Image 1 (tube, rainbow, N blue to C red):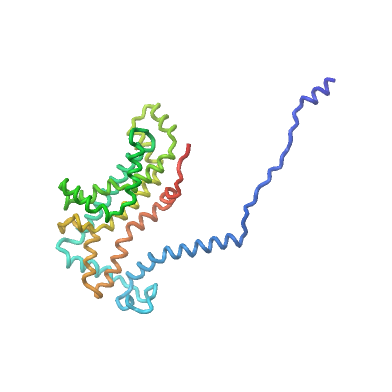
Image 2 (tube, one colour):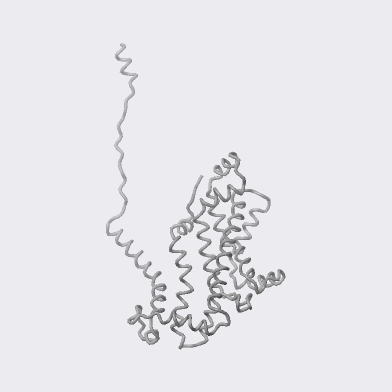
Length: 300
């Protein structure tokens, strides 16, 4: 009897065989997917490659028909002619236009990231009266392009007496709604439990924001940085900047179009100069930017 009771009390262990599910795809399907992706990548990279090749073509190849993609006799004369013409046409050194553009782009982008991040942090992690209404107003502002808001912006800047100054471009860059929208959506995925734990440990609100939140939302502020850099770098600011020594690089380079066909070579070089900075920034931060656009992040 004792043996039977012991046998009954012994647990029975069942061994189940785990079946691994094979992915429902074939080698031919994978090849087809990669082929389609390759075709789309060629279509997207073609304008950049064509612009760079155009800048290295001599004048006779620029007007050859049918046009060719790659230059047969590559030359750097277009770039050297660009700097020579700009030094002769402008009343100020060419380096002054470069400085103005770099300064406004750096300061405007930095301020935009800080302002958008602070506002997004409050909207995403704290509840306060009219908070949802304010964010809905930001979403509505995304519908209006810069051409629609140019006149109201000019009237506001006139009242502030900052027309024909660097601030006429920097302050509007701070308040871009796109950055606030992306940062708020990304910060909503940041766990509130981590913030509460940091407060229990005695961290201040500013220390939590700068030392904890901002490093973890790096993909988001890199994404809004590329949008800000692209907008400021390519802005000619002809409607708010009148002094020649304060004008942007885009405005100075656009003056080459007045020369007609003779300046077709330098104009091809202008296209590369205007796109090279945003493209390089995107290349070095593309993984972070794609992570934000896929709306990924920390989840509770």
